[in-house]
Image (cartoon, rainbow, N blue to C red; front, side):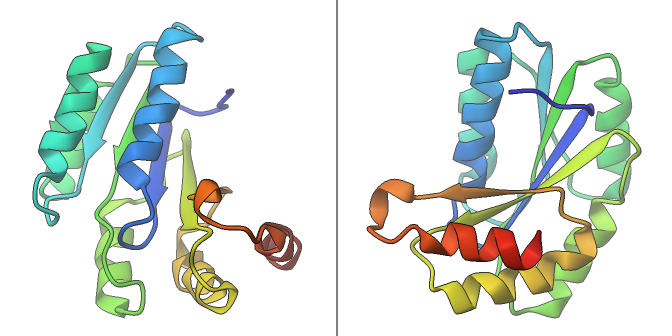
Amino acid sequence: MSYDCQYIQVIGPTGVGKTTTIAKMAAEAVLNDRKKIAFITTDTYRIAAIEQLKTYANLLNVPVEVAYKMSDLQLAMEKFSSFDLVFVDTAGRNYLDPQYIKETQELLSAKQSSETLLVLSLTAKEQDLQKIIENFSPFNIDKFIFTKLDETLSYGTIFNLMKKFK
């Protein structure tokens, strides 16, 4: 795994596995690549979300900060400015709610050294995935991450979405 940036912002709808995906990427960065990493979570909505990320942080022996508002996020980013990678976890909520998209976008203002990853579950219908991508497009998505590959028998959606959204 190689990143050309310092901040990895992970976005997506409810239940796609954003936090688990971050933990897997972080474990690889720490254990295989020997990177100095940290976590920031803006997911203050889901019950036990903070505790879940803190558990992963403890297992990897890395710091985690909780950002309730933009000023918290800025302070955490300053605190971790000397780290190789900082994974920013976001709350998953209804992607059809424009207010959620707006709130998340305001919180995650683009940084020069950031990359935005949209997490998509392959158990969703292709039509829904297209709508998710369209609704999250204001974030200037750099990459897709497909989860739950082991929970589907249909993989063509990956290629269709990659082709359509480049």
